[in-house]
Image (cartoon, rainbow, N blue to C red; front, top):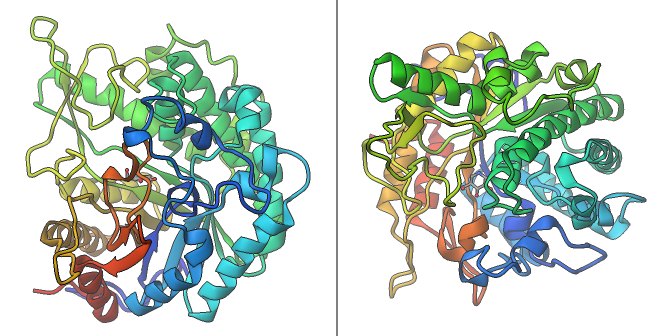
Length: 474
Ligand code: IFM
């Protein structure tokens, strides 16, 4: 997979060399939770906490990808995918989070990577998609500085085994969720609700990213690409009133600049430090951390689903938070004075408004803010109430419409100069949607979790055609 600028951009389609992929994550699809030496992650523990996950669902079996990866790679090949973004399970590779690697765990990823390469599909490996070894959480999890060092050691073990065949690596997936949903309002594992802890976890996650980037650079071939994936927010003030724009500035700080400034400029934004000063003195940022965090990377991954509309809070008319995140408590540390509202438009099964312009806005903002940095859309997609009809087919016209609109936004952003090199649809398979369990289906391939039967939905056939032709139909 190359991040080089494509040589032949076209007017109506996607540039030659554009990477077409799909994405998944270990805990959401693998299953085999206790096999071949894997130890529990925070999600194994959290999903057993009564009421934490709908229906009491766990990732114990999930889509059984650990045993069915060959069938799944064959499906990817049928779709014509050029790349596959997956994550490694830290407690499978390094049980307990410290000590030696688990050869049997690494063997699985070895087999997966070889299978992908045999089918001409480029592997794109994410090191952390939320499954922290439980033992490390018992020692403080991401609020403990040590966890960042354990992560860098784990990155080294993975790179040493797979680095000769995996060209593209991502350190973290959506650290906003790890910090703010995991430690801020507790709707994700480990289920802690403490805004100060969320800020500490945030910094240690970024430190882990920086340390691992250094380790990967030392261990991987020179041509390997190292990246980070963020779920940046397309923040919009409801009106141009100063109160609403102040609210947008605050949330832009907590969603976007709290990541982009340290990673790309080696500093935390002054307004974010001021907004959060009543929660944390930021003494967890030690000398040298920001230099570590701002090591150059080769690409930025962007995950996008829906925009974030904010207004000044009206104390006279308090309204429930509508930022699309679960939980009664806010995941946002220091969102005082901010009211979250839904964007216009139809909603997905997650209740998330469909608004492709947010994706265009983010890609063109990154074009301007980080000139020349290759961008990848590392997740985009939608959950709908899918079911197999009596003939066995799964018709999902809403998902096709969602994908069409968002891919058109990517195409427009490229035409306007955004250096977007690839698109990874979320998700290849229906899977364990975290606190929603198996109730929300994001896959373009339907999974009957009782039989583990896979059925490509209409959207899978539609996407295969887009991949084949490099252009959107119609
Ligand atoms: O399923 C998740 C994924 O793990 C991270 N990004 C958002 C997806 C949909 O909620």
